[in-house]
Image (cartoon, rainbow, N blue to C red):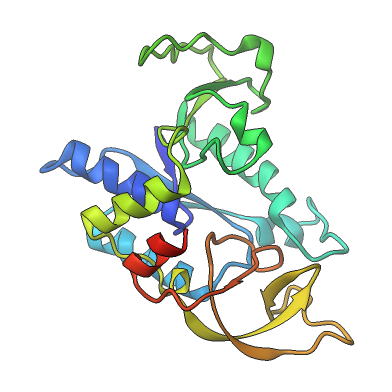
Length: 240
């Protein structure tokens, strides 16, 4: 098995649950991060610090490596989120991971709402709803053929508020970009984005300093900040 770990709040909670589940023994799973090359520096620093703190093994699948080799091409909009699929799939196959734990939640988007807690993937990492198994109460079927794997989403039925209340209860450290801070941002398609090598800002997009925080973290090209003065966990929970 392997835990998908991006340094985002959901994967941080996933790792925390694993640390508690196996304590005082070490977590027997490795971590896997699909690095788009457009990640927030604060999040990468947190990722590396967490790996060192708990003595974990980290696998990194780099989108930039695939671009450098000509296997993948940059998109005109600069975002690399859709380019993560091939590096992730090939890393799973190369390392023979047969259970991939993720922090996806059904309340995030329609596509994730259709996933089951144990979601079967074929040898090409494709999801076929007709092949998914019934999930009766808390009974899960992880059987799979060689080359296949299951994606496991233990936080499926958690909400954003559930995640933050758990973080508060367990006093879990997060990257500081989850809390209100001053940042230079520019507006595109209704979102406050951070300038970077990925392609922003363009002509006509002015940079300004604002008090913002991030509700989620990912590729800088498509992860927008929100105006907020919530600089503590308690204020974030109230805001949500």
